[in-house]
Amino acid sequence: MASDVTSVAFTPDTVPLGDGPPTREEMLVYYPAKFTWRQLKTFVNSGDLGLLKRDKKLQKRYDTWAQGIKAKYGSMANYLLNYRLQWGQHDSISILRSSLDEAPTHVANGSATPAVTAAPDEPLDPKEAKKLPPLPPDAPPYFKADMSPELLSITMNDWPYSVPPEVEHSLIWSRVPILPPDLLPPSESKISARLHQDGLWGFTGNESPPPSPSTLPESLGALSEWGITMEKLVRSPRGTDEEEREVRKYGEEIEKFVKHRWNPREWETAWFVNPPRLQSVPELTHIHVFARRKTPEEIARLDFNSSQH
Image 1 (cartoon, helix red, strand yellow):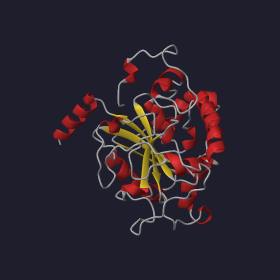
Image 2: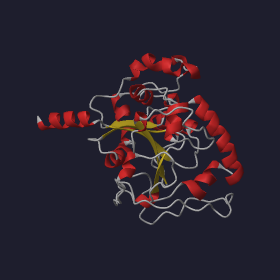
Image 3: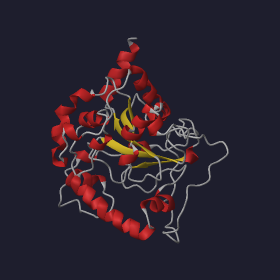
Image 4: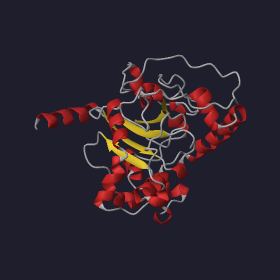
């Protein structure tokens, strides 16, 4: 994190409760994490991304805020396009800051945080229906790790899922589709049907394999208030080894990008792309990234082990 807010004793007496996007202090006091880092990785790797949840009280606060946003801007997509997303620029709006913001730089392939920019002015007509900016001639047809930063808007999630304090929840918004536009319809392709129902996910910077889906029952207790049971999961059965490799191919460019931005030596991440059934703003494609900065001890151990090979 940009600062170690967990070292300070925040209480309801010292942290006022607002009604818009929460501060990190509010997250600690009023919406403490329901899930551990291992549980989050288990949910991501379970095959059902619908297991990833926002705190119920925070969800209620979000729903109320979203009503006001839609009344002002006409739709959530309009809000994002007219105000929130800053293509090719540093996220100057988010209240929640990333520790990547501590030394912002500009790198052509988007692997580092762009230079800081001022927050944009409110649009004259918030309800004006705005479209994505026209794509430059050299834009790729779908997401590529080395595409121009102007095609992306990387933000913190203003309304994060219930993640531990040491985990940052970022969003990578893209002006081009995540998946190839020539992907066959789900009715004509088993792989496409899986991507459409399950989405995509992966992990970077992990020293050991992510928790196996078979361990999910051990973590379901953390989802009891949502009434989640094994019988309610929505996920595809495991395919053949060839099918599994084919599905993973569609996440290779995302993984490369995540590794560029969140150096695997310093960060462990779990990234995912929600399937259509779970997308809150289907008009705008985006990737979720849970990122945990490694401790100095972890990095030292990693460096030592690398030196032994």
